[in-house]
Length: 98
Image 1: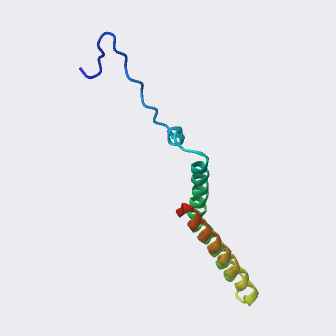
Image 2: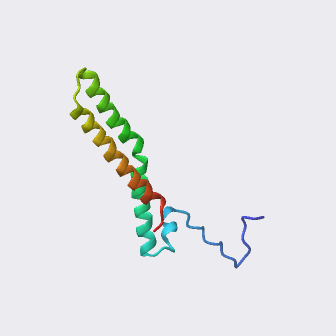
């Protein structure tokens, strides 16, 4: 029988399989790199919702005002540029290990 123990033998300790077992053998620099990677991946993962938000604002601006100015286009283009730069930095930080 696999589960039974003989007289005088003790059962082996149950392995500790939780998230903190991941950090058992890590030092401070490993934890910092994992935190930076997590933040970068979170920024990279927010790419689609942020782009959809900016594009929906742009479409609403163009839909509500049939005569739109170059200022409106430049403003919305600037927002898209900011999102692209932020997502690019987040993707770089999330996917690299310094």
